[in-house]
Length: 417
Image 1 (cartoon, rainbow, N blue to C red):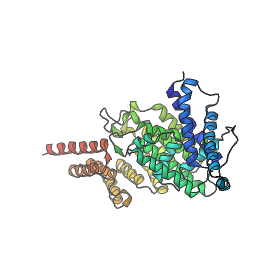
Image 2: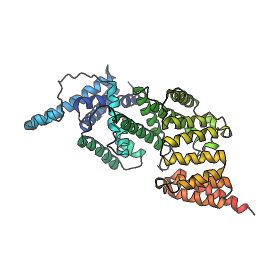
Image 3: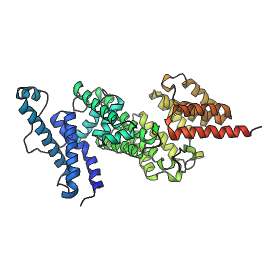
Image 4: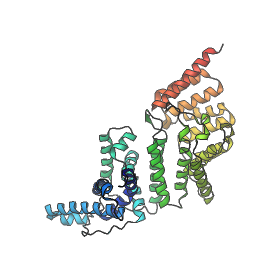
C-alpha cells in the first residue's frame, strides 16, 4: 500500500500542471479548478488502495476533463438553445477518450493567470496558493489568520474577476511582460515573507508558508531558468530562510540577527543561495531581488556578528535605494548607515522617513528608532519608542520582545545614579 503522505506530496506537485492543462483546454478557470479538485479528491480516495496509475498526471487530467465534459454536456442538453453561445464563449467538448497532453507552459501560464495585475495582491496570493500550491482553503485561511469563509470569498472574488475581466490563459507579450513578471515575483515574495515573519498571531514564523514560497519560486525558476530576478528572488529566500532555526528561542521569542547562534544556520541553503547570486550578478541588468540577495549573502557569510561587512551592505543598500522606491529599503539603509557611521547618522535618516506616509503607524519604524536611541545611550527615548512599536504590531512574539526590551532598559535606567 502506498503511503498517504507520499500521495499528498505527489498531488500537490501535479496540481498546477493538471489545472494548467484543463484551463488551457476549457478556457474556464473556475469550472476547471472545481473539476480538478474533484479529480484530486478521487485520487486521494482511490490511489492508496488501488495503487498509482501508470501516469498519475494523465489520470488526473482525464478525470478532471471528463467531469467538466459531463457538466458541459448536461448543461447543453438542458439548454440546447444556448449551445452556440456556449461554444462561442470558449467551451470545448472533447471526445470521451481525452489525450492528457500537457505543456510546460501550462504551469507558467497558470501562475501568470493567478498573479495577473488585475487582481488585488491579497486575492492573487490566495489564488496562487490554492491553484498552484495545492493548499486547501482552510489551510490558506489558517496561514493568514482569517475565517475560512472569508478566504473562500476572497478566492471566489479572484475567480470572478478573471471571468468578468476576460483575462486570457496565455503568457504575457511585449510591454506586458515586465508588469506581469513583477506581479508574479511580488506575490511569491509576499507569500514567503508572511511565512518568515508573520504579520499577526502567536507565532513569529509559519514554516509551511515560507517553504511553499520557496517551492513555488523553484517552480518558476525551473520554467524561467534564464531570468536573473527569478534567480535573485530564490537566492534571497534561501539565504534568509537559512537562519530559520536560530531566529526564535525556546518560548518562540524572536532572537535578533546579532544574537543568533550561527551554528544553527543551514549551510546547505546558504551555499545554494550564494552560488545562485554569484552566477546571476555578472549577467548584466541587476534588479532589487538580486541586490537584496547579495545583502543577505554578506550577512550569512559572516562567521560572527562582529565580522559583518557593514560598509559593503551600506553600499548595496545605496544602490538598491536608487532602483527601488520602497520605504523599508530606506529604513534598512538607515540601520546600515548607523552601523558604519554611528547611530546619530542612522537616526537622522530615520527622522526623514517619519514623514513618509507609507510608514505612518508602522511598528518597525518605531522599533528601529528605539534600537538606535539605545545605541546612543538615550534610554528614556528608546523605552518610549519600544513601547510605541509594541502597541503597533499585531504579532504577539514581536510585541512581547519589544515590551521586554523596554522593561530591560527601564531596569537599567533605574540603576543609574
